[in-house]
Length: 269
Image (cartoon, rainbow, N blue to C red; front, top):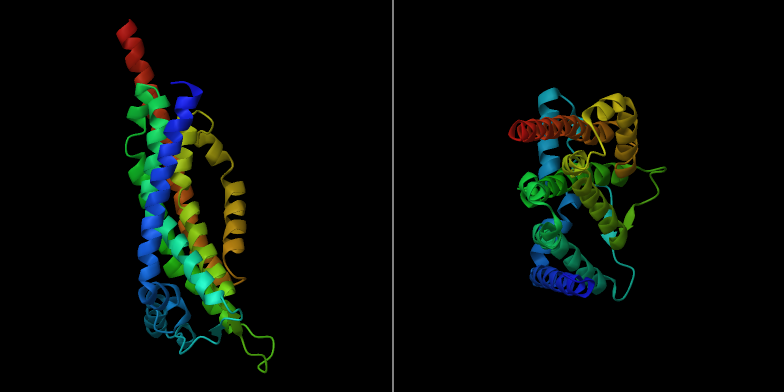
């Protein structure tokens, strides 16, 4: 294919991906009550699933402080068109998240023809695993990281006379940042998989720099969570597990490459 033909193919992949986002965003826009009351604003209420599970855990261990009766803030809008614009932008954000598996599939369809047959064979299931990891990360961010951040920041006061009146945009920014950041961080095993396939990274390198990686992971956890030790630990643990899983994946990739090389040498002999 010529360069123009590649651009034409890319254009149609982008068009189909954009249509998928618009379809999901439109569905989210018309499901306004579910989108905001049951999904977006749910972590701002004390009856949210995470807070109820925290309350049950606190009852078991005798820590009543883990059971919030109510969150110490109210959400308000200060702009005339703030709620409408936030409704539209949030719908598109939800549309992108819901269409992510299809978006990556379209990207993969564009990249796949340029791969060698053995590279296509080695990359089977990439769309499935990338989508699953992203969804797991989003769920972790929505049910764990975001509620911990919201609960901590809502309950933090420098003086009892100051009331927390949170702007709608600030609340949505915190929620989406926590959720999408975790979705991207959970892609670490797939990133390591492709880097190991390309020979850029090895399990020995990851093991050698494990201590450095732990420091980086702690920094990432500190960035995407509030300055609360318990929240940082809860976010750090799954990322560390993903790093160890990535070492295992890199080791499997190298073993597979060595096996293929031995098979090719045996055929040549």
